[in-house]
Length: 402
Image 1: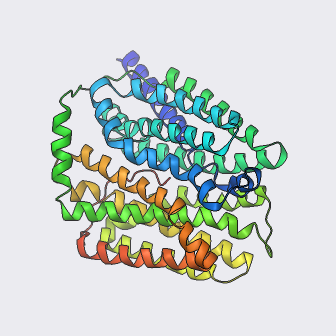
Image 2: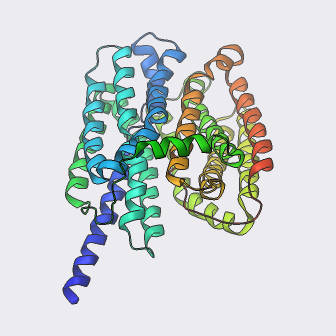
Image 3: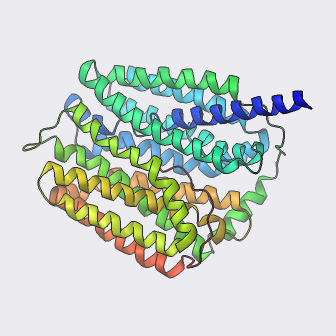
């Protein structure tokens, strides 16, 4: 009996460590190029629209492939998808650093995006299957913590490395860290014991079609779209704004702006508890209020006001992501895995739109136009969530914010 307990404890420790490392690695490089966009514009003599594709190519690939990767993992297993995708992420990131032109970097970033859902969505399914029922929540929380730390480390590491070495070494650093993480996940993640293969892909397609007719679920997906649209839009174009006079921030200083991501480690679990008490509608409304308050501060042409505004808006984004993603289980009428895949697709489509589509207001009205567009998008999101989100509390664990 003591031996069985020891083995279970050891497997649980391996599970927790493995999924935390996987979460760290998958978000290590997804948005790492954001503080480098100004540098890429100079190096390749490119426009904001062209360099923004470095970000949006990856998020677009995530959006397009998420539902299908989930179906593949349902057929062949979880660890068999997670580990190869981590190794592939390492290689595609290294290829970015070896690229000779902007188009090649964008291509390899798209390949990285294809590999990303194989870790994000599949790891969440792996946790729900392999964790003891009483610890699934705590394991997921540690995984989410790993994703936040990965996103923060990737941006800061890429920015400081580019400033002191070169942008190529930034990608090399991210690739090496991801490769080490892939080896660790391969060795640590326990073999699946509760996985049951599902080979009938037609069931998933039928479920997906039924979800498209579900008003509350589609409203949830739209809210997720606006959450990442606002998030990526702000953190993409603020780099161009703060790199110019009167701010003239360096690449390292731009990377330091992303320290506000540390708020996610605290805000995400706290917002879940608040939603437990107040309901999803109130959580979505609070999110919009915070994002708009932060955006209004960003109209002030003072660095301190902008930093405080970014922190407030980021807090709102974390709250909004928790409210939207935790509403999926309530809005979906069966086939929750397919519903989650649909949400992830809409969520990352929002990120892709935030990186690239906002170049139009940027060209026509500069930074004030970007902020105004995000405020308008948040108000539309508020109307949709107020109409379709449940008022009574019921909480499930959210997806990672990145």
